[in-house]
Image (cartoon, rainbow, N blue to C red; front, top):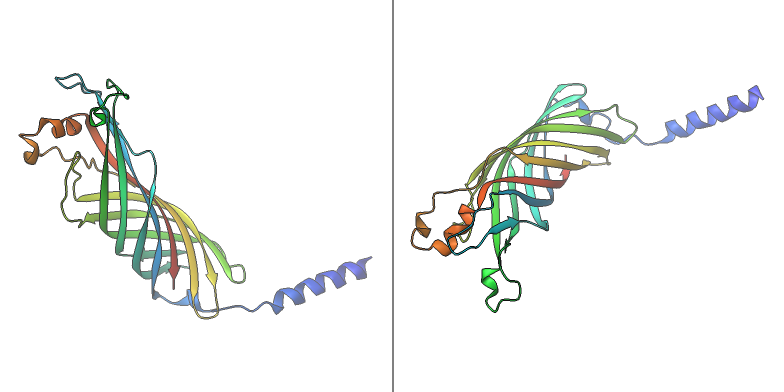
Length: 238
């Protein structure tokens, strides 16, 4: 029995050693670079205030569905210690949010539905500046999982086009996520899923363009604050 167990253990060790270790010195570099492509899903957390207009309309805004967008970035990675890296990944994110407005005091069967339901498609082109800490587990052959956290500055460079709601151009977000490094023969492939939480109220109440259009201004008056959230699926090539 002892001889059998020894034979099984020896066989497992041989099989273990037979696995090819791709890019064995990839994590020894002090600094390395890469790029990424991915998908993002933007959401707006809207806080309504139940404002009632002079003509007895009460509008509520919501983003019921997430719309997919596209992300691209470059990467600079600095090794701080064996398991901890500092990353800077400036890039661009393209997406949109569809806001739906419903008048809770309106008639859904009215001939003029614009007094009951409206929509606004908010397109976004973000320039992002994330700074992140990446904490990696021990490498197991060609796989190394990790967790990450950081902060991200955002500048919206979309051409101005305001309708019911106007959003501010700058934001800051907290990031948290996880991923895994896959060591391939010529590069590392690192899929990553992260969740981003906006810190700033994005609602811009300065609407001189609507001073003579109360029918549009009522949507801004019906909202207290708007915060942005995102889910980002990224594939890094390092």
